[in-house]
Image 1 (cartoon, rainbow, N blue to C red):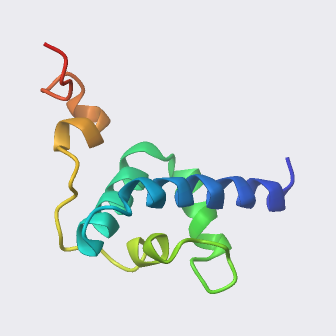
Image 2 (image 1 turned 90 degrees about the horizontal axis):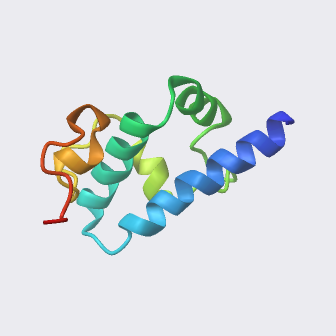
Length: 96
């Protein structure tokens, strides 16, 4: 896979996360995007996206670009048990 197609895939994936969080208040959406990427993306994926650049012209959703600017101060709207793979089984399921 070429670097361009790999970058395109990462941008598409990051933008899909932003689409999910778009209905939340902006500060919560940014925190949710940041926490999702940190929790579920490999370091290699995160570094590749940062190296590609959360910059104008990258194709990244503005919410994703905000998520890469420092540590968001708001809480993610997603419960910790559902957004952190280390808490698997700690009440993440809504199933009875």
